[in-house]
Length: 359
Image (cartoon, rainbow, N blue to C red; front, side, top):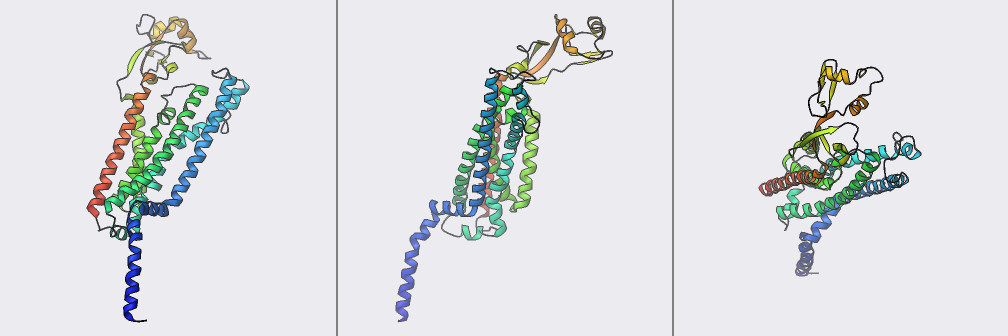
């Protein structure tokens, strides 16, 4: 075999690899690469989401059956259905509350395990230099992987959001209360979808900025908890609340009966002190007037409501009506999606600036 023959074969071999190389640089190649790099995380996420969705669907069906047995109203205290629903720890209501609490914290797991490693792991392992020196540009590499994993995250969280919203409404039916209550509110209105996608993007941006997986993951945890507490603190006043006088003992006309969120409306009664208590003419009730109307008010057993109902007393309540729940959901979802958009822009700028200086 002559040297010329060896050179010819080498050229033919290299030429035959060119189409495959071009294909590897295309969308199909990046999709395959994404799957190879993140397959176990994606598979684990899929299994977890399927388990949670199935569990929530089963609980919703179980509680709905008990609700129908009580003629589609709150089961009376002492009934077998009430005892079944309210069994501590293992009853459907306790389990449903724990599952909904878990759904609230899923976005932080998305940010840590799907968002942060997308760039931070590549920086740590110094593999971006190799990936970005191929035919594909850094920005194209970023947007393709973001689109693939982001669509996966959106699909999973959309299914979980639908299941958690259904469970939240069923829990409201069997347990009473208001759909404005923190847990029911945050797990309905497709908020888990918006929050999950947002924290995926934030995780990517923090990974690009910090370039280390563990510090970026810690930043995601701190940011998630801080923002969640801020939302819980501020969301009752995102819109100007309404107010009015409400009688005691009227379960149909009280604000909570219509899924309202009570911002302020508590009463204080003690020796020489009465706050937020009014008579039928909406004049403040003094301690002397209260003692005259209810002479044994503070004597055991204490029962304020019976005295207040008998004397037609009122309380002044500041609240958000239940009809505003969709608007509140839209405001909060828009805020989270806006945060996610800013994070994507930040990740794009960081990758664009980094170029081939990865690591």
